[in-house]
Image 1 (cartoon, rainbow, N blue to C red):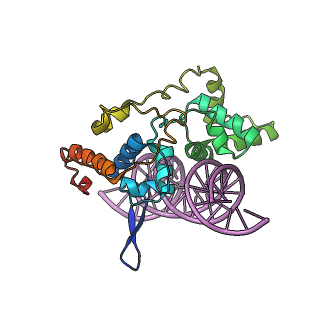
Image 2 (image 1 turned 45 degrees about the horizontal axis):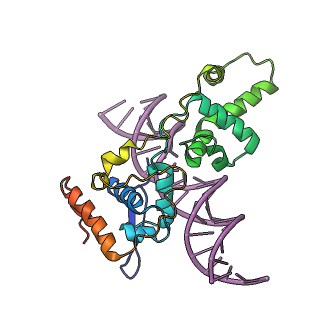
Image 3 (image 1 turned 90 degrees about the vertical axis):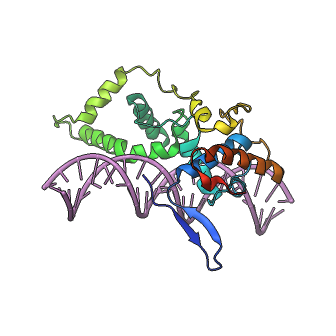
Length: 218
DNA sequence: AAAGCTTTCAACCGCGTGGGT
DNA sequence: AACCCACGCGGTTGAAAGCTT
């Protein structure tokens, strides 16, 4: 779910940064570039990667969606319990709360809080302040159930990088990039124009097989 | 079937911070 | 000390999906 893509053209007819939803092709370009060269400078990187996006947008897309260990899908009871407890201690420090939930991003936690958990905690608080209330909604029942669930799956996807090999065929025979921790920072810039051109030619070669002729930018 | 309403969440924006010069 | 730049954070927005009437 996202806003539609829009390319902004300024008065001189020059292309400026694109906004809105990311296309599959843009995702592939970003993944491929980061896999090959690592993250060296978000501001400069879109230009080298052939993306008409701001560095900020690229960083957000990578951190919240494309990064290999980003956990998608619904939150478990244990995760919700951790969020609720952490929020009661830390407040709206979403990044700090996210650090307690491997694979979850601050953005997704923030969204989940506002959509699901905020109401639950205020309801709970209201029930406490009105002790004669007998009603117990589904969410309260969930709160009881969550304590009984095992917590062994919270980190289940932390080491799952399998999608990289399936989506990045041009690079599958090259060195395996370790995305854990901050390894991929400080890998250096792409270096020469020849090196960069070679990189994109590899990508184009592979993508032509899948009809992605837009990749042919050289 | 379709119109209107609600929910969800990806993405944007503005601001604060830290490092470099 | 002052400025610049890159990055990260938290609040907010808005389109799409889902639901209700």
